[in-house]
Length: 137
Image (cartoon, rainbow, N blue to C red):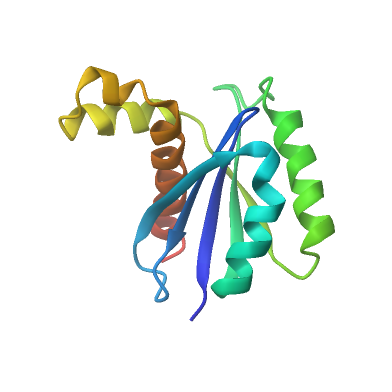
């Protein structure tokens, strides 16, 4: 089977997570500069089979758009332009950054490690993907 790749897209950084080939476990892969998303995806999909891309869609608690929603929609258009055959699904990413920070605290990471925004983004992408897997199991 091919992997599912999750994206937690942001203005500066983008967290990336992937499943194992059996699509059972989500694992943080990396955090990249958001400007490098398309080249990263081209390289990664050239090396690993990817079945689908899951992308976090930022929403407020009342389902209205956040300041980041238009940014994500623009990134979705770019991905679809470069990967027209790749299925892409937007999923609610509400509270994933908070959940990532809480997870880092529970893992016992020191304060300086918890301030690592790149790590927060990677963990948030992993949470987005694991929740997607849980809903679609």
